[in-house]
Length: 339
Image (cartoon, rainbow, N blue to C red; front, top):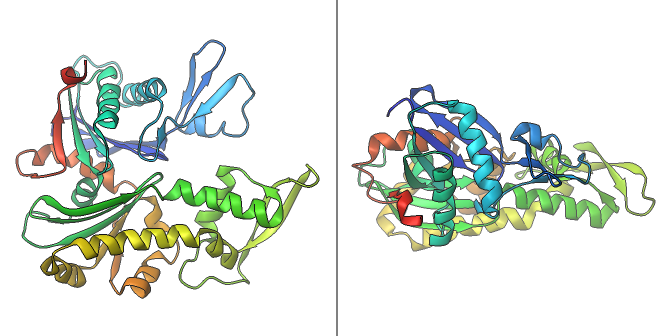
């Protein structure tokens, strides 16, 4: 892999970039802020994320990637270009870029991703599916005739796949993941306590309070927001059990996605997965009690990948060394095809 080659995990919540032998060189929120009057880009990444909920009317803060795919072409192009310039500077050699995409991506969505990378100055763009990238990044040997199961829970999508002999045997994706869980928390607190909270507060509650295996009424945290009844600042005590109730439907939708992939898989591979266990990657893998809940619900051992959040990005960068061996889920996407 050349030192100028860039791997991008284009996530709904975060963008993680690797560069050559340097490993992960950037990990920031997929957020962009711009001035609506002048249309000038003000900030991207963490600087833009810090503006969410605190910006005046003439400054718009947007997430141009929704459910794992580009929802606003112009903003996505600008955001990706800014991130690439941040890690490369203004170098003369145009990089090769490999971008990680959900396994269910359509041709139209692929085109938007390739054009975004092309507009940022890439000489060649490759696309790789999330499950394949996650497996490679986790250090799993996928070359042998042995089944491995991956569950990648990101910000916008959950990708479940069984991989064997360098290819995807069966897979399933659902648009239920970290952001959807945050919205469920906001809705629950709004309905039960008539308290309006922002997405950053909901994310903090999810990270600090989540216990999916054995939630308790006694473990609580203070949640602050605006009372819908009085319009004034207010706070409540929110418990683990209430959080579980808020996100129960989303959690079990992920369980059903795992069950569906197992039902569609050949019996021999299911036997391998029973022995190997299931591998969790992505930020959602860190939800408290998730591994125990999967084992109790589905009867499968479950492991969290080392460096679960950056796992997909690392695998994306490492894919350049496997261009001749990967049978499925990795393709070269000529930029000229979309011009």
